[in-house]
Image (tube, rainbow over all chains, first blue to last red; front, side, top):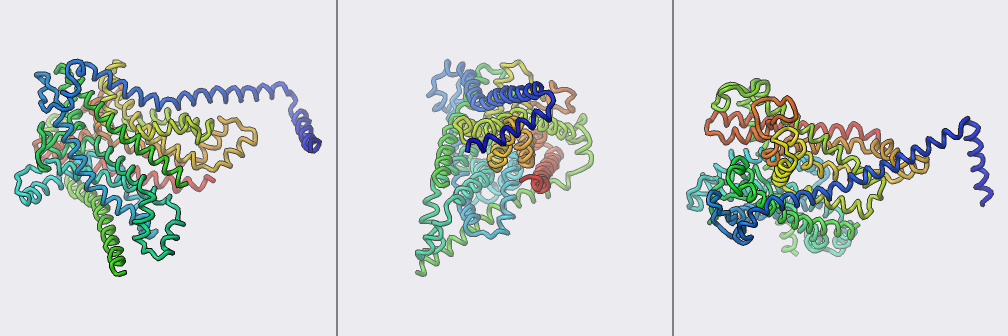
Length: 325
Length: 282
């Protein structure tokens, strides 16, 4: 065995020396190649540390900028106070926080059932032809800029709420309301939830479907009792990701939600979500003391909530992928 | 037995209705933008910058915003590519794709993908104060570049991770270093995917408004250097739509149509690229 492997080796080395007239040069070239490789390894490794670093930098930057307002006002005053008067230094963010929560909850209530049903349809029932049409559609839907959704909201959703939903509920409304924001957001969240639920349901092994069907279950029973059960952590994670997408969406909501500083009492009242607060006041924030600090604090609140949701659902999705693969 | 069949039927109908609502809403949006946008389109819109009374409904177009958006999106995509290509190569060629560090980087990217663009905007503002930058194309490029970094990086990463492992092994066994394998084999193999990733990032960059409010500013002129403020299409739409004058609002619809056409164009281009170049890969 040893002899056999030694023979081609010597053959090769003889060969190389005979072809290459200056073996010294060749060695040098090889060394340079490997040195370059080692050097580049370090370079690309440094780059790969960039993403965790950036995440830390974003958090640190916002924390540093929100320290001034935290020194003047207590955390509970900021988060639970409903008095927002920048000129007198009152920065109660509760109206904004509640508006954000209301808008997001409405959107998620609309989006979850519709998206999950559609995702089930796409993964279990739909034919190849429909999938071929649906997949690019969803890609396009998720690629449309939010300002376009906003325009659509202003042109279609707002008049609809003002002319039909308001009178029907017996409430006078301009149409610029929490409900309009929720509807526009729901449409923006559809592709997020559908795409993840679809992926998760696809990795549920086919054997499970076949086994339940062979036991006499109808197709829907096999989906409801077996497949959804297997995929449920992924479905929950998808909904949470959709939720956090809706939570931070800015321009589309800003355009239809009315932007009045008040605690909304019903879904046809105007609201003022946190992202809108930040985006609307970038002009004034340098001229009023502490205003920039409170806006950065608002951004930090947004970031922290979104981070918690994201970390949790990514963790669930990763674990699920490992388990099912 | 009948009840079970009825349940099956009921849910089948519900699913079809849900799918109709969701795909119908896409058509409704496209339809609205087309119907409102086409009557207001004119050659002036895409060939002229705003003149004196533009915001009162007089002459002019939004060339400043179209050019500005392209400058910003191209700059941001290049900036993001410079940062992501080494990152992705490290994760998939130098380290094993499933190593601890790769997974941590991947998790961070996924989390960053979920951060709302307004938070990037706010961070951009902090960064500008810290670096002493003013509202400019440069600041916009940096912040939008960071915004699209996770999208580009994760798309590229998926492409490289799914490249056949044998290719890498074959390259190593021929004596290639990891760097040579990365650039002469892996990048070439995943080129269509990399192009798609870049286009995806580009599309996001051109459509995002919340992150540029703080950083890129707005101007009626076409920027001459990267230190000038720059107008962007989404912000142009947003500002025009909030005008009380009907003519100005109507221009916003035309601007929205332009933006939509650009986005659709990018989407079609990336589909075409995948089709055309996939045949050269294994």
